[in-house]
Structure formats: C-alpha cells, structure tokens
Length: 222
Length: 391
Ligand SMILES: Nc1ncnc2c1ncn2[C@@H]1O[C@H](COP(=O)(O)OP(=O)(O)OP(=O)(O)O)[C@@H](O)[C@H]1O
Ligand SMILES: [Mg+2]
Image (cartoon, rainbow over the protein chains, first blue to last red):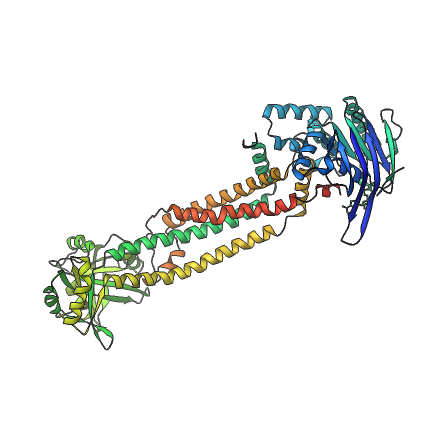
C-alpha cells in the first residue's frame, strides 16, 4: 500500500523564487491497483512519482509504502528501497545510450552481485516478456523510440518490483506502439503489481483494467 | 556478501573505460608519460649515485698538490720519499695526469700515466699494467674515448699535439675498464714517460702525489704532517673529495628536481581539472544509476575500479618503458643532463640498481592520487538528490 499524507513540495529555483509544485496531496493506492494520474503539463504528476520512488523528499508530509516512511529514508536506504521495491519507467527512459540493451537491463542488479546463472535467468525472462530479445546485443542509441521504451520497461522489471511507476509512457510513441504498451501494462497488472501512471494521454482514461484516475491540477488532486 | 569482490562492478568499470576510449587513451598517455619521466629520472639518479659512491671509495686517502699563488703546480718527485718516511703511510706514488682537449670532437680526455713496476694506487690499473705495452708508445682507452676516436677515424693510433706544437703519435692498444664506468669512460692510460712528453712535464716533476694510509683514523694526522713538511702544498683528503663529488652531483640533482617539479605540476593540473568537474553525461549516468537503485558507495566503488585500472595500467606501462629506456637504451638525451661534469659527449652505461623504494614512491605519487581525483567529483555528484534525472 502506498500512502501520501498531506504532501507539499516546494522547489526553490535559483534562490528567491519558490515554485509550489504540490499543495497538500493525500492519496492512497492499494496493492495490485492500477492508478492513473492525469493533468496538464506542470501540474505536479512527475513530482508525485519521484516522491513515491524516494528520488526526492517532500517539503512537508510523508510518503509511506508498506508501512515504511520512505520520505524519511537516508540516501543509501532510499537506493536500496528503489532497488528492491520500485520499477521506474522514466519519461526520458534514462537509458545509457552507449551500453547494449542487455547491459542496460541488468544495471539495477549489478550492486547485488547475483550469481551468473540467476542473472541470466532474470534477464532472459524480461527480454522475452517485453519482446526485445532479438536486440539484446545492440547499443541502445541505435534503437527506435519504441524499442528503447521496451528496454526501459524491461529494466524496470528486472528486479521484480512490487510497484511500477511510469512517467508519460506513451509521450514518444505512435498509436500502435501505445496500444502495445497498454498490453504490456495489462500483463503486469495481471501479475499483481501495483502500478501508477502519470500521463495526459486520453488512451488511458477509459481502460477496463484501470482502477482509478486522479485529476491533478496545479499541485492538487481534484 | 558485501566483502566479496563484485565482478559485475569491475566489468562495468572496464566497460566504462572502453566506452570513453579517447578520454581513457589520453589519460593513459599522459599518466604513463609522467610515470615514465619520473621513473627514468629516479633510475638515472640511483645509477649515478651508485657509480659515484663506488668511485669515491676507490679514491686515494690523501692527494698532495703543490700550489703557488693559489694555483696548482707540478710537484717535485723528491717529495715522495719524504712523505714515505712519515709514520702510518703505507705507500706513496707520484701521478702524472691531466686533461687533453680534443678539438675535433669538442671534448676533454683524461690522460693518466702509469709505471710498470710501481705499486698501483688504483685496482683498475693493476690489470691495465698487464695489457699495456710499455715498449712502444701505446695507450689503453675507456669506452667513451674509443667511441669518439672511432667516430673521428682514429682506429689504430691517435696524434696528440704537444705544447711545442709537434705531434706525438700513440697507438691505441686496447680498452681500459674499471669497476665503474664513471672512472674509466673518458680515460687514456699510458706510460708515465709518454704522458710527460705529451704534457711537457719534466722527469723530476709530477702532477700530484697520492698517499695511501693504512689506518683510516690516521688520515688527518698524516695529512697535517705532510702539510707541515710542505707548507706550499694543498693536502686533500678523501673526505674533502667526497664532498666535492657530492657537490657536482647536488648541482645535477637541482636540474633533476626541476624536472621532477614540472612533472608533478603537470600531473596536478590534470588532477585539478578532473576534480573541478564531471561532464554532463557523466553526471547523468551517475544520476541514472542512483535512480535505479545503486547506493552512493556502489557508484564510488565503480569509480574506484575505473581509477585503479587506468592508473595502475599507466603506472606499469610507464615503469616498464623507463626500465627499458634507462637500462637497455642507456637513457639517450636524458643522461647528458646528469653527466655534464665529464665533458665527454658520449654515452655511459648505467649500472642496474633495483630500488623498491623508488618504485613505491612513484606508485604513491600516481595511483592513489589519481584514484582520489576520480572518486571525489563522483562522490559530489552521487550525493545530490537523485530526482535530477526526472528532467
Ligand atoms: N527541480 C525543480 N526545480 C524547480 N521547479 C521544478 C523542479 N521540478 C519540477 N518543478 C516545477 O514543479 C512543477 C511540477 O512539475 P512536474 O514535473 O511534477 O509536472 P508534470 O505534471 O510532470 O508536468 P509534465 O506533464 O510537463 O511532465 C512545475 O511547475 C515544474 O516547473
Ligand atoms: Mg512530468
């Protein structure tokens, strides 16, 4: 279960000027739910995702995931929390362009020092699941946008996380690829993952397997 | 678990160096060049130090020179017997030697006269006496001299120009070698009579007199006795000589020191440059790694391996090159900086001196410093909030 309690988030861009990105967010997402955060550009969707992933800390309020106050985690524990619990599909994918598909996907597992067999098994599983096996030796920078996104999703799933966060997953995809992505989501939902998607793509608003849609407007849920 | 070496991280580090191949190449080039320079300088210094101390040890205990108006004059051979009477003196010999300037090559040779039946004041002369033909005018020459002679087409003989302008033809009878090359390199060894003729020194005179003293503790006493006997002489003891040899060398190590400083300075410029910033791609990569679950220490470990691999590799390359340069090729160009005092423009075989301290010093000047310079900026980058990658 993910709970956001009275969250505010302020950014002070170059000193004096303060941006109030979130203004008192209360949100709770149950295990296995698929939730969509919709809202215009700048409304605060990405900020919410980064707080849940403990990539940043709220100005006030707290984020609790499975009983743990992740907003209070010290840096190294926040990393471990991400490694164990979160699969994040970033808006810009955040792949390392000069590494191969395979190397990008196993990145989250490197610090864990798994044995080679286990690593290979996990890699093979996600390569198959997200249909990117045939490109595994290619450099990411030589892939198309859709392929890069599949690599990003594969990487987000290599640690078999309970929670998947996706930021504008269809922003760079055409309709066919977007539908393909939705199929992958359905698959993940069936596996029982908790999924939160930040998007303003209407494709997501009427899907049968989406549990709830929250409208974010200028840092508030309406 | 944590203590086990994580080879995935090592592999990632190697991969990362390969991905940045131009940068890696540049760093290896600069770093190994610096290690090479430093190591070569150190190796040469060690070799020369070794040669010098060997040379100094083979010096006679006391040298007596005659002076007049503060200048060095030929001494009367008769003084030999007087000195021999002093208690504690083991042997005394009159030396005939001097420098001969060879204009064609612009170098000075050291001419040394020896006597067939005299007790030799240097060990190296003992075997030379067997080799040298005293019946004809011939001489033995050091390796350096030999090379210069050959380059100037003097293979069998050499013509000296005497002070009166006439020529003195000397056969080159063989090679003269001593324990240290410093000692023999620029030497021409011949009979005292020939040396006298070339320098125009009368038979009753000698260049100086060397005195061997049996007991080291008596050197000072004997020296003062000689001084009393010959107030117009300069009495030089081994200790005095040591100091002047050391002085020559100290001046050279000044040159060395400036080289050393320049190398270090260059190195620190690179380090400073590294510390002052990562490229935006490098920062982004660190951000990504953190966002997907790497801890700060995972990132730093990876950077540590990068720094270790690249600097250790450069260190080894630099050291190997320096070994080859100094001990196989005899440090062309560089050794002339150190050997200016023997105005002989010729190469000099550097003796192999293995000194683990030197290797350790260069190691500590390069590897840990470079690693630190790799880690520090990454550490700064890795400890900022990870949501940078969201944008
Ligand atoms: N690091 C930051 N420094 C300053 N302001 C920031 C920072 N990150 C976000 N903001 C601001 O906070 C507000 C919310 O940003 P956020 O990225 O959460 O919006 P979003 O809903 O994801 O928008 P988009 O649909 O464009 O991705 C915006 O006004 C944005 O400019
Ligand atoms: Mg956003």
